[in-house]
Structures are given as C-alpha cells and as structure tokens.
Length: 68
Image (cartoon, rainbow, N blue to C red):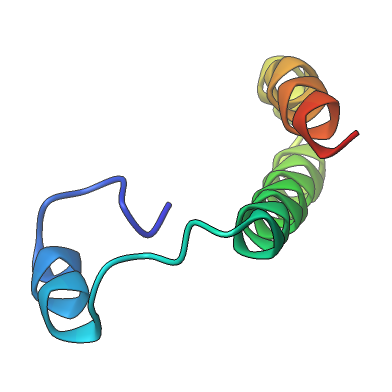
C-alpha cells in the first residue's frame, strides 16, 4: 500500500531511498500485506459488508501463496 498512490508517498520514497529487495525484505513486506488484508477483512465484517469480506479471501490466498 505504501506504493499504491502517487501523492506525498512519492516524496517519502524519494527521500528514504529505494526499497530493499532482499529475500528477507520481500518476505516481511508480504507479512505486512497479509496483516493489512486481515485488518480490512475484520473491518468489513464489523460493518456487515459480506461481499467485501469474501473479496479478501482471494487477495489473502495470493499473498499466502507467495509466502510459502
């Protein structure tokens, strides 16, 4: 999500420098993505947005596949 929009985040990455692309950094990024998707799922469940909850399953499966 940190790279999803071209707004002030672009300035952050310009100052911070290029993203780390090591295996450990990639794994960590995927874990954060899974955590984010879990948070989205819980929020949608709390708001009774059943279709939105269902949509998170395929996204989570894709991330988990990359983690294995």
